[in-house]
Length: 234
Image (cartoon, rainbow, N blue to C red; front, side, top):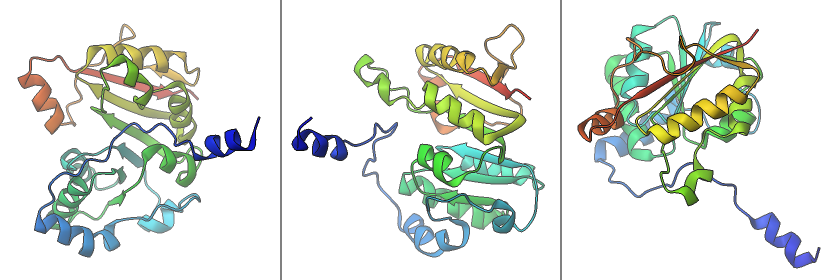
């Protein structure tokens, strides 16, 4: 292999499951990023977080990947004050919106990380550190040539399984049936996961999860919603 080929490989970027879009950010969201993120946010660092020290207690821990505008994350944190929540998102308007909701609701059991979720799982979270992982309505990347961008891949399933405690749960939802079928295939193939659905496919929509903005849009378009739940084997 030539030196040029080595350099090209070194410059190759990892495949991301998202594209950072410009998006309009309001003045309030911008202020929240400036004023509230230092309080409720955690910087990305390539070392495992001490979650007990961060939250000042030892409680069940839930990670939501791609929390959007934070509506589900904040509502779950409000309903479950004895549980600690981590939210990971890359889009600044959504993070700002979530920070405003945290502040307005007096929520104290949430921390946010503005970074790629796969890197957060891989570098910042220790083995068996989570009780639940939530992945609601990730980008389906419907075109075949973009399927490699879908976040639910075998390596991702293995990483989530490693970070969950035995008996922990991985909750997923999508309104794109081909992606739901891929999720089933990938997660069924991960030996540390067991499908919690009776009949081995979908579960009923969890009562604790209200509809997300993407879910409401999908239903307006006539899409079915597919809810999945996998448990980490002991």
